[in-house]
Image 1: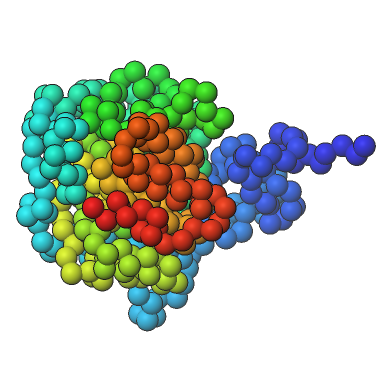
Image 2: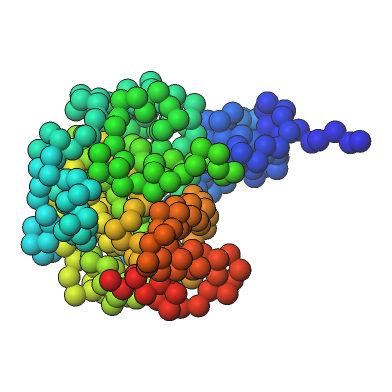
Length: 418
């Protein structure tokens, strides 16, 4: 049997999990970590020379920047191309715009008031803002907690997904490299980290999620220990963004509700109600080929601006469409949870993800499995009751999903309209 070909200065076989770059001279492939080329930097290289070839041919040639308003900055700047989301021109325009204040829709509460009982009575349909944390059950590190502390607790070798904001594109790098980038006084590009889930690290001991998120969470209440599938961990994220980081409009996966707490710095949320009209517009915008060139806030009647300063917690209900701007270097903590109060909207959001063919990587892990577990629990709970329509309809809907015979959701689930 022939030996696997060897690559790079380390002379190792190809490893799909490691980023590699091809030398344009010798045509050999090299691990970025072996030749000090980060994946997000590779896109800026026009002609790459490996360490051996640059001795004879000189250093690699970099791409020439022609514009500041397009994801592909090499496009000619003839003034005819629209501004794209995330670029420096976009950020400046966004910062200069005015929006209706979210104060007219936010519900301001004290931590002790935010309970499942309160939400069951009054509903969870509008964002909640909490500035007095006592009674919320949220435990976090002190505001002096730094990005270097994150590296110490999580481990610098952990490979993370970062977003190149100007390109609105993902790339992978080690946490230690991101921390090194974050702490530099000069940053050649804007990188944003929003997907560091740390439940399986030592840092998890420093954070307790709000009681309301823990007590209402489907995963925490219904996921069986003996499940064939691994338990989804989506309740503890650490978000580290430098100034001018931007995440475009989105609905959190599976229609989950979200809690955010700004430990230090500041976040600005652009909030849009999940009305039937807005959801239809959002789905059309999401599937549009020029999505990045259209600010979704301009497509709806009202887009609200919500500034979340240091020490503030924000809870966003199911289905709310939102974008996020990091107005200054920021560390925030957050998490996602499914719950009983907005089941109809959660299922609508999941159906939308299916229609949009959202990659599994960006979906709630094992969403259908948790729905089966909840349906099973509901049926058991309702045994002996006169009206079992809630549990049986929910159960029937997921049977139809698994067999690809799903009729209109409301024909099976009239209770979703209540």
